[in-house]
Length: 143
Image: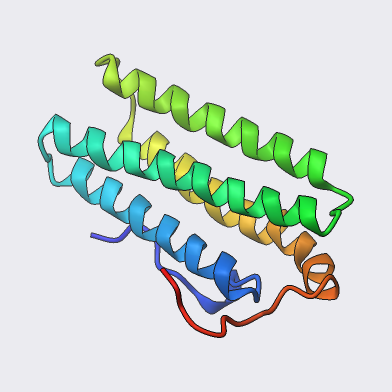
């Protein structure tokens, strides 16, 4: 059961980043499905942890690219990443400790975070990346 579907207008136009964003969509959908289908708590914990781990990896990739190309808004962008990570971990800690929280609240946060971040923050670095020589398309997929 998908809560979100990838659309081409979400693309930043850099294949590496777009593929990572698509993976985040997939993981958010898996988490939503695990919650909605009433999966065992352990299954939800595993998917939640995978989403957080992949989010950290994705943020690390973006931040490394920003540093390499001397992106002028790096500090601001990293602060946003740090805040998102903090908020997701708060949700995870509440879940893991058995505190009641709304699945709808969590999913709303994740969906809004992903697409607002892509469309309002990530698209700002594209010109800097491309001007610095980052290729829009992979020569070959390597992962």
